Length: 421
Picture 1: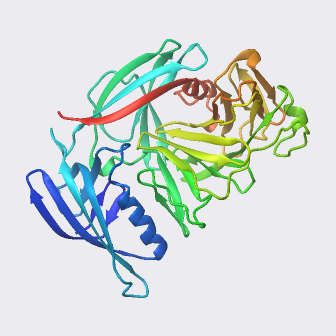
Picture 2 (picture 1 turned 45 degrees about the vertical axis):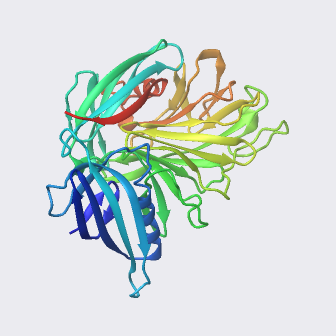
Picture 3 (picture 1 turned 135 degrees about the vertical axis):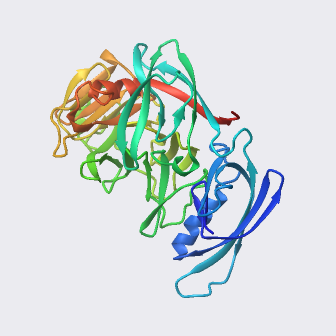
C-alpha cells in the first residue's frame, strides 16, 4: 500500500502500529535516482517541526479509514545500501496523531487582517480555496480563476487604512488540499519537487534552481543576471507562458531611471542592478499552502524578500536596501500609467496578457519611464508588485489591471489553523 503524508509519497507501507488516536507508520521507498532520493528525503524530513503546516493531509491507496488530517512527529530515516542499478533504497517511519473533531474533513479557520498600504480603501484578495465547503459568510465576494490544477475560488474583501478583520471557516477533502495551493519548488536533476518545511537544500546543483508557484503564476531566477522571470498559466493552451523578465536596481538620484538604462549599470553615482548571490540558496521564511515567502541575497544590495499567495495574480518583492536611494522595478515593456500606484503594458502580448508593475506608494513619490516599463519610488523600503492582467481583462471579475493593483495594495495578513467541528 502506498501513502501520501503531506507532500511526501511513501512507496510501500510495511508496518502500522496503533495506540488510541496515534499511529506509527513505517515504510520503504525505492527512489529512481540519487536526486529523487534526496528530494523525497527532504520532503519527509520537512514534515516535522513545521510551524507553517501544523497538520497535513494523509491519503492512502486502499485504507480510507486512514484518510484525513493528522499531526506529525518523530520522523526517522534509515539509508540502505543501493541494491540495484536503478533504485536507491531507504526506510522511513513517522508518528501520526489524529486531528480531533472529525479528522477526515475537519474545519480550517482562517483569520485575515487587511490593511490598505497606500492609505486608501480597496477590495483585496482575502481568501482562496481550490475545492471545499465554506461554513462562513465572512469570505466576501467569490470569483473564479483557472489554475494548472483547475478552478481556484478567490474571495475579495475590503481593506482600509485603519485595518479590517475577518474570520472564515472551510472544510476540504485531504485528496485535494494541495491543489492550487502555493508552493516552493526546487529542482533536483531535471525534476521539480515541492519543498516541505523551511530547510531548503544548498548543494551546488540546487543553487538558482528554485521557483515560487500557485498554479496561476510562477516566478524564478532568470538566465539574465540579476533578473526574475515571471510566467502565467494559460488554461486555453494548458501551458505556462512568459509574461516578463523583471529587473530592479537603485539610483542615488530619484528620477534618474532614463539615464540609468535597463539592466546595465551606466551611472557613476553608485547605481546598479542587484545580482543574485550564486553562492547560497534562498532562505525560507514561510512555506504554507496559503502563502510562501523566501529571502535571497543580492551582491552588494542586502537581502530581498519574495512572496506569493494562493489565488493571486501578483508576486511581491520587498527590497532589502535601507540606504537613502531610490529603487526601481522594470519589465522592459512599453507601459501606460492608469493608476496612481502602478503601470500596465500598453498593449497585450501574443498570449493576450498585459504585465503590471505596482508599488505601495502613490502620486509624487513615484516616477515612471513608460517607454521601458520602469516604476521608481523614492522610498527604498517600499514593496513592489509584479503581476499580470490575464486575457487583457478590463476591470471585470477581479482580474482587470485596477483589480490586481488593488489586490496588491489591500494586503491581508493571514493565519490558517485546523479546528474541531
